[in-house]
Length: 82
Picture 1 (cartoon, rainbow, N blue to C red):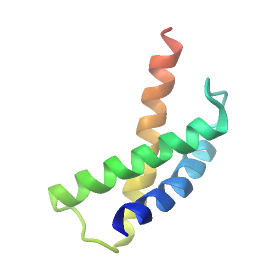
Picture 2: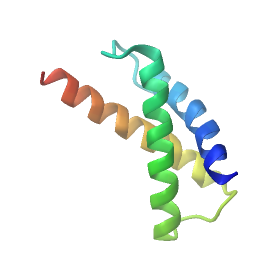
Picture 3: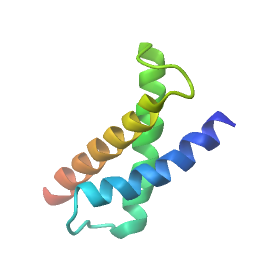
Picture 4: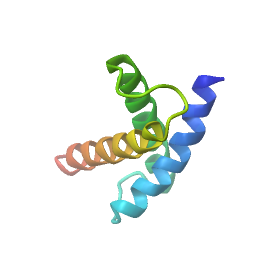
């Protein structure tokens, strides 16, 4: 159930990341949301492993948004280099 929760949070974080970083993405809105899921999963697992926050804290959602923005920024950087 924990993984499913991070996927749902990732959907929201991906949408918020698109609002925070507007512009044209090579993959469109769906790819941005999928990148949001990846960023949320990454931030969730890294944050818990580092002991930054516990399950169920609001910091997890904030970390998911930051992770989604970071993954989206990396995606734009590498997609622009092509």
